[in-house]
Image 1 (spheres, helix red, strand yellow):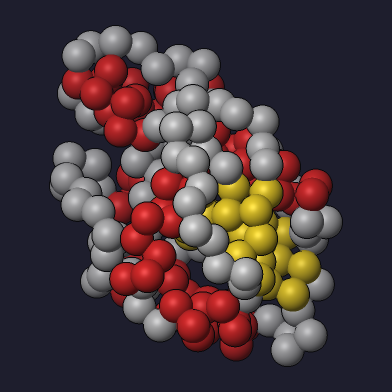
Image 2: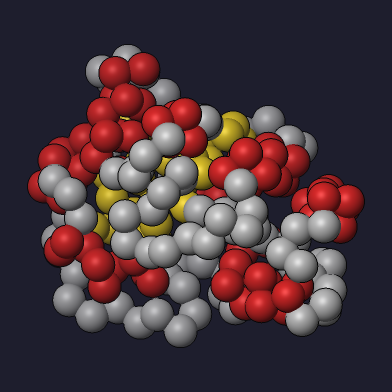
Length: 189
């Protein structure tokens, strides 16, 4: 079995995340890609304007129409700072020792890589895949990291939150079901 793990705040989940996930499924020949919304990320501050529960629900809505996608509550249920190494240990125990696990992240995360908790253990638990993100060029990359080029979509959750706070639409930048959820729950206002 080949399993991709894609973590993030997904605040909100958007088409860039879904394009990354879909291309990872195809390029890495994944049987399953698991979105893992974080509760509290260790390397960025997250405002409590939108609950972890809402971020999880939006991820479920976005992933719901793809049979290869799944959403995990593992980090949200911990209700504390989320470390990738702990999440990977969980998935390593959950699946057969023969399962190939791919940990997927964007190039925007590379700048903090040296400060990640137990980075060497992460590299042993999973194949580390970095997707090129527009505006985040690669610098020095470990030989243990595989680079994956993707269709470039310059969209970010922080830009979407800014637009929403300004009263602007993000329709078509998020899946329609996520847009409906944001409007119905009056999120990011």
